[in-house]
Amino acid sequence: MRFQTDLIPATLIRRYKRFLADCRLEDGRDVTAHVANPGSMLGLKDEGLRIWLEPNDDPKKKLKYAWRLVEHADGHFTGVDTGVPNRMLKAALMAGAVPGLDDYDLVRPEVKYGENSRIDFLLTGERRRNAYVEVKSVTLSRRPGLAEFPDSVTARGTRHLGELANMADAGRRAVMLYLVQRTDCASVTLAADIDPAYAAACTEARERGVEILCFDCRITPGGVTLGRSLPFEA
Image 1 (tube, rainbow, N blue to C red):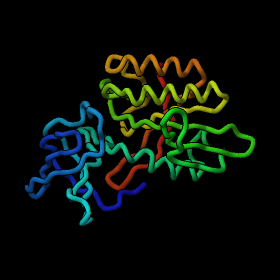
Image 2 (cartoon, helix red, strand yellow):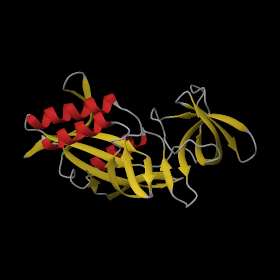
Image 3 (cartoon, rainbow, N blue to C red):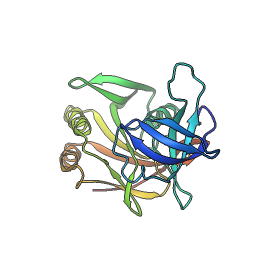
Image 4 (cartoon, one colour):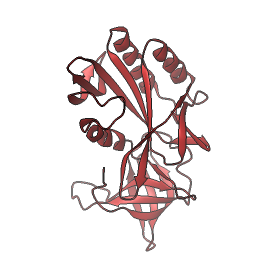
């Protein structure tokens, strides 16, 4: 998935009100960018970070910049836009390019299921059990090489695990897919100290038959594509 317009580098001044960030462009101008991330962004919002913004000239948008990437000192990148995983994965799923989910005929996003929920993707195919796939964007890393989810308490995420477990109980294929929007991690685990309820719900969901799939991303200022399969450390 390529970004719609070329990204430009900037320096982060501050992130505030969840969806806003003040940034300084290389020419010295200060601008405000939209932040498409409702999480805590732990470790990704420190003043002085080198970041990448996507400019736009859409008259319908109040803000003319959107924050897309953090560039780390070692040259690695983290994607901060939580909308990217679903857009990128939709294309990969339709192309049959997601290992473990590559034998389905139809990919349907945002399908109602359970109790007032929507599954990110419902996959169907001949002689295949329907697959209910929930996607979570993973951006937290507090130890080198290890990605963690979540970065803040997520009652919504816990509810999604319960809905997936119910699908598994009913004989459907239920998949929790963690997409690591970082280029510096080799495995995925749960941040049980941040949200013990989510960690407990994940353990129960796995015991009831929910599958866990983890992938990283190839990230550059040009775009984001699906990367490697990563191991999950319970």
